[in-house]
Length: 426
Image 1 (cartoon, rainbow, N blue to C red):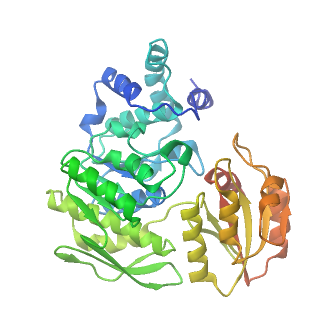
Image 2: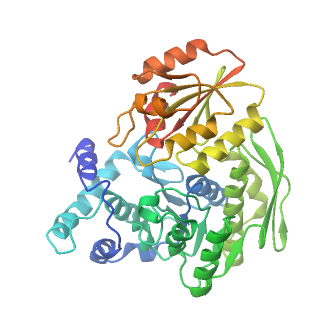
């Protein structure tokens, strides 16, 4: 089997169909002698911030000398990023081997009453096998959608993290904060510590009730551990972290936006929990690990003159964080927006959030089954002026031709759009 064939086989699984339940995952992993039970896993759920939190935690663990597997989604540059070891994506050859290992299993499962597994379920099983093969010290799993019925919820983590709760994927997870929190809180396991930065009161109450039900020790930012934002710097944010008997020195992250100190704080709280559990953890390594952490397409500066920023703000909460970060760091600049989005998102409301800070909005197309046409986005845009250039490369050329050193171009919307347009800056 060639790499292209392996990738094609993965992508021909049921991609967008939501099939709640873990029965297919249990069936496949049981046939593989339950490799997930041999892993030290940490589970991360939340509406926004999952990828950044996983990245902070990976860097903190690597700084201690640990080998860390990460399972994240979606990918930004190549599919292989979905499963990585110490930040290095699975190789093409390893991916082929994994497909050849699980394909007979999937073929067999398709013939049963249980039915065909989804693409995400197949990739989750592959990642579990990969991390077992590589004998990682820790495996960090980011949920794909929700938590309770997400395929990653097959793991029994040593601790869990819930970053925040926002109204995204409401058609599947529910319309209210309470309903969405119920799905995210599904990753909480019996007696396993859980950490959260959730602020929305109704959502936090659901998490507290689930933790109580599972007898899981819960630590909440602002109650059990604390973060103090000190300043916006030219590089990012500076802050202090405090928990029980540990108060950090001044720390700095190159990830811009106050929301990023909460993601960093969750990772630091997890490290302190691991230290309490007896793992070898040296606090002196924290600051360098936090400062070295980056994550693609999260306020990622891909060009400095003029400044070009990629940010996959694909829901209202993400857009709010992006707008506030732009205000904090670039209030003296003229901001131009290049945008691409997918169906089932509150596009009009998100564009309204951009309106107070954006001088011009440009809309373009991208290749994705659920992509919204550029003209349809421009038609509902309240930003004046709004332009439509259907070809990405032409849109970029026209915008870049207008920009001066006093301007900032923000490319935002769907992460699938960001993944596609990022190649022009590599």
